[in-house]
Amino acid sequence: MREEELPESLSEQQGTRNVAGVNPRATDVLRRNGVKSWTKPAPSLYPHQWSWDSAFIALGLAHVDNRRATNELEALFNAQWSTGKVPHIVFNPEAPPKSYFPDAERWNSSALSEHAPTGARTSGLCQPPVHAIAVRRIWQTARGKDNERVARARAFLKSNYPRLFSWHRYLASARDPEGSGLVTIYHPWESGTDNSPRWDAALDKISVGEVPPYTRYDLQHVTDPSHRPTDSEYDRFLWLLELLKRARYDEADIYERHPFLVKDVLFSAILVAANEALLEISEVVEAPREDRALIEGWIERGRTGLEEQWDQELGLCVDKDVLAEEPLRVSTIAGFAPLIAGGLEKERLRDLLGTLDSEAFCRNGSLRYMLPPSTSPEEPGFHPRSYWRGPVWPVANWLLWWSLLRMGEDDRAEVMRRETLEELSEGGFAEYFEPFTGEPLGSGEQSWTAAVALDMLAAGDIG
Ligand code: 2M8
Image 1 (spheres, helix red, strand yellow):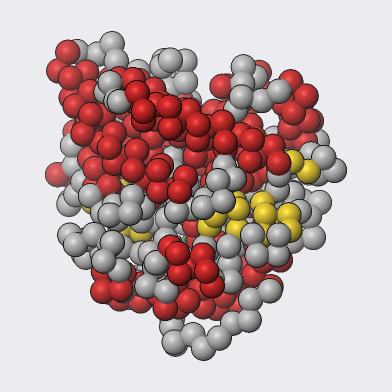
Image 2: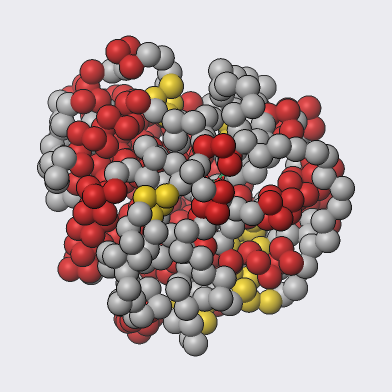
């Protein structure tokens, strides 16, 4: 779709405040990255639709164009698998050739799995379930507006509630056969924090077999290859993909023999928070009482599971290698998972805030802004420029800001919001930022960065 064909209302500033020109620039990024009914995560590095990016994008769009926000999620959920899985990538048939790898052909999911959708080509993985949180935001921003907008939002909630419910049920069952309350991921790409040192120990145990030849196209879209995962990380990523294909993406088969099965605490915490949102949505749509009882059970189980992964020495929650039955003890932003899941005892909240306010994260004296590096600078696997190994990610800031607000930590939340907006005002809507200099890294014009800025700017306007 050409720019002039995009909806006018995207440039209307509905109820958001303008901080140093961030608002109109953020809106423009989302407009420029718009493709038909959904939004590319970035202009050229990511030419397809990504699952959790779309959820964050819808959250931002809810403030400027509710219809586009609902279209974004509808487009994604139209590609939901019959198991309930929401795929991590929905491939754009109009993406330029050789623009992103692995492509639809390499995943080959529609040929390999009877559960894959028929109308779209997708990857075989999933990503953290931010979607219900975005759907609730769409409802919150519509409430109190004209009757037509409220009716449209209610209809959207009604028609999408069953999809959200089956997505969460899939995660609570296929991805947690142990009933631990924690979600198992099959690939670092499912975590969304792809090359985080969280996965190093589990990846090191895998012996990489024959991977069919491939060319990385991601490196042609960044100015410096050190911003992206290394070739050896990619070989492991691609080897795991081959194994998932051999299992025909069958959950039981994967659980039986896959070499990478990890309980991801960040993913699990987002699921808890999303279940809280789903509970509210279920009330709006008057869902059956049994659904609500199930959702409440998932919330409780999730929080208990996270508590079991608490590491007192790190002052954080840690992931668990299911196969080695070992905790993966690494200090990263994922460790703040219990804050995101909420419902904390006073003591645990104090521990987490203590870690957030320590040298290991926001009070490191060399930081350009008081924002948490994705990996603590005290970790041996820390790298200030490499992707999820150290740079500051605005979406991660959003998760912490929003969680602090929910915990009643308004002052800390305000610092996180102000610092994030100042970083964006100075450096633009980059994918991530060098923590000590604030240098924008990765792709410029990253959609979810713009989207979380819009949501932060609107804070105060919504309940
Ligand atoms: C990054 O992941 C993709 C693979 O899924 C990649 O590196 O090619 C991650 O930051 C992920 O969290 C994000 O959803 C995706 C698109 O922004 O990019």
